[in-house]
Length: 411
Picture 1 (cartoon, one colour):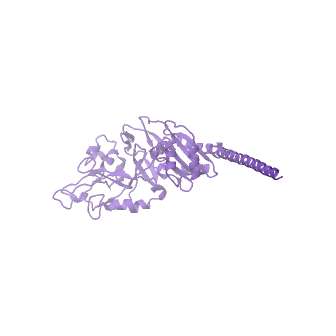
Picture 2 (cartoon, one colour):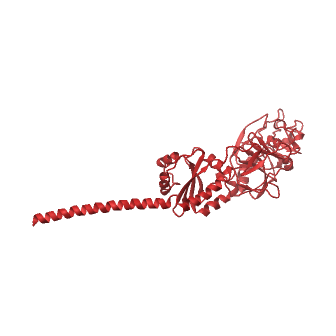
Picture 3 (tube, rainbow, N blue to C red):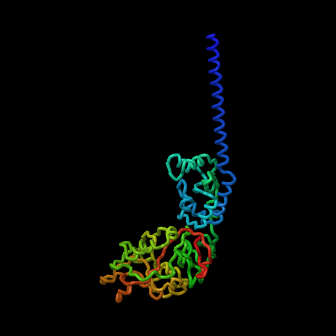
């Protein structure tokens, strides 16, 4: 009986072990099946792809948006495009419609990366980036997609637990027609004479008596001076913010800092609505005479026009960038002339043997003036002038036609 009991016990143990092993195997297979099912339902399902696809169409419809994504990505592993708590990344210059679009899709987070996912996969392997939570990291690790030339990739996490990725172009096209300039997202035909938008080696500039370059910024009327090759816009306020001396202590260096520098980049900058303030870029403002005496730049949020920019706004061919001082032609066919009596930025030197002639460039009666040794106070830094702030803003999406009655409006 003892042997039979021992045999039955051993047999029961073997059977139990076998049954337990089978159950564990089935459980593991079930878990794998459920994980696969969950991934199939949560990852790149039709609803998630459709929602992200609508955002992709928004970017692909406008070359400037694609360029903004590509330029901001650079060599980074990824950039933030949208976050439910903070909206669209302001540095991308996408406008308020971007916030509404992603909110409507139920997106929680959207990032942009290269179509070659090697960089971002290595990044999440080596870095504990708190913005990329574990579930989003798991999705990125599971993306199996080949790199596509001239493509980027949007990756989204949705509030309902879904995830999706979709490839998008880096640019609609690599070149803009020779007779076209981009103003924000708008293609504007260029001019070769008279009033209009002129193409330059560094971008485009508005010239003439009254071009359609009005833009509403900070709920005020401003005007576009020029656009750079990155499609950022340099704009100037259409009306003066008041009179102020260049520097109340009568020093002529912008970076000292001058009274106007301090005021514009502190008090005035902080008075701009935060929604618009976020669009202002750091700019290397020219602070010297553009073509003689002094040169140099200063990085600021807000600055003033320089003599060359005033000259560039004239459509009179007798006004040249390299001869704007005391050139009466520069007041002709020049929309900046309507701004009247204002300051330009400069670090001009004192006049020899005239200790009180601490000078700056001025526009007086439409003419850019330097110092007159017999009348040094005509250009003295202590004299008050009307101030027209200048800022540079990131590539915006615009509506409107640019007229004073229908100015460009940032979306």
